[in-house]
Amino acid sequence: MLEIKVKLPEIFVCTGEVYGVSVKRSESRTLELFNKVIEDVRKEYDVHNLKNHPVVRAYRDFYWKIGIDPTKQRPSSEALLRRGLKGKIPIINNVVDAGNIASMETLIPIGLYDIDLISGDLELRFAKRGEIFEPIGGKTEELNENQIVLSDRKRIIHVYPYRDSRHTMIRGETKNVLIIACGVPNVTKEIVLSACKKASNYITLLAGGDPEECVMRFR
Image (cartoon, rainbow, N blue to C red):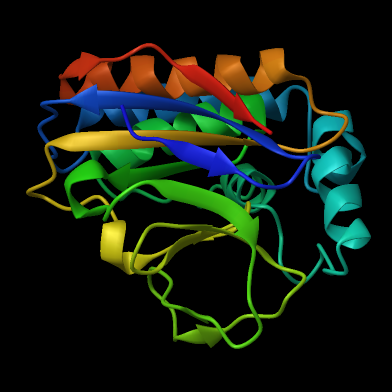
């Protein structure tokens, strides 16, 4: 099991690992699960009232506290659910989609990483001024000191709880997956643990593999 040092007292993560997955293009079973979750969340939220949900509010408040405008850099779960409510479901592959389904269902940001592309143990900390981040599907960014990052021995693999690095993204050849569900103040550890377990269950349902028990990590 990978070690993760959490250096910030207010935030926490829950991690899970799934070994021996088979990454494929999403098929009908994945789409059916996506659609079911979208149907369920539409009964509770719309794009206008979503920001008032207590969990979404907690991530937004946390962003404001560390000096980030959450209307410009949305927590990944909120951004994902907004797309879903507009009928724009992002279909990537069966593993990534499994994590996105769990995130939409729980409103907890969830990151998925190829374990074999991670170098050494992980550390959750504030960024250093001028550190470089290379996001999936985006241009290289220079980070500020108020941004929270997850880094391995070589590079930043995640800006918390917002975007993931292309260097450790899930690919067709990925076999072993790290799940990280992100927590902030006023979000309970129980909800974050539940999100991690859902992601693990959906991955094994849609992509196979052997899951490890989800573990809470905090300072």
